[in-house]
Image 1 (cartoon, rainbow, N blue to C red):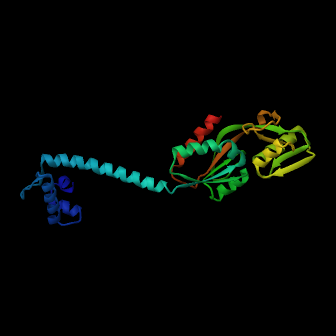
Image 2 (image 1 turned 135 degrees about the vertical axis):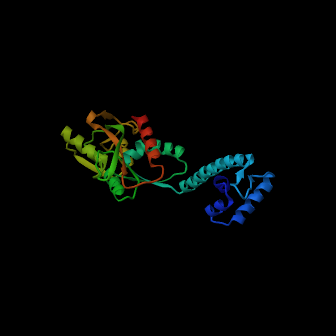
Image 3 (image 1 turned 60 degrees about the horizontal axis):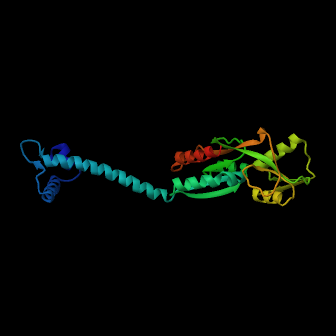
Length: 266
């Protein structure tokens, strides 16, 4: 291609950082393989390409462009095999939203690997601030400097369980703890017993076992447990946090996929 573009064997040799005899040798070898002359050589004038050279030049350009695309695609596949996405989830998100998100991400991004940690909302943001995770899902309208917060789908809370005088809640820093305290305060309820657990699964099991009452997402299936609908102030949202200083492959596409799943649950 260099000889074709420069119309000179000597200039082509300079551009390729080689000697003119070497360039001439390769051209003669190519002409022998194609069984046709590619250039008309004239010592007194510029090297003139033949019709065969015109055709070969266009075809070679297409081949080089296609090779560049193929090379990039292969490199991307190789890189994607080692991409790990670190995700922090609050426990309600882990139960209500993340199963659908995980299914969608696995289908759309089969080359991604996931390291998922379940914490309460405040600890999720602490992990995000320390850059130990790439994405954080929480259930409280928290604020973190240096992070972008996206509002995902709404989630209605209900009061569930038998009125035994015992209220079951989560530990400090969790979304359920935040909303339970708000509900008890608004209703003027002073529990006879307050039980604090660090697991939504245990909270649900205790409620189903008749131990007492607690707040849960309306989306959580409960077996033979009475529930009381709550007001609009207990229609919380799930939130997605991203650290603005962090960048990882396919970031925009992954976030868009998460938002699409959340929109279906709205």
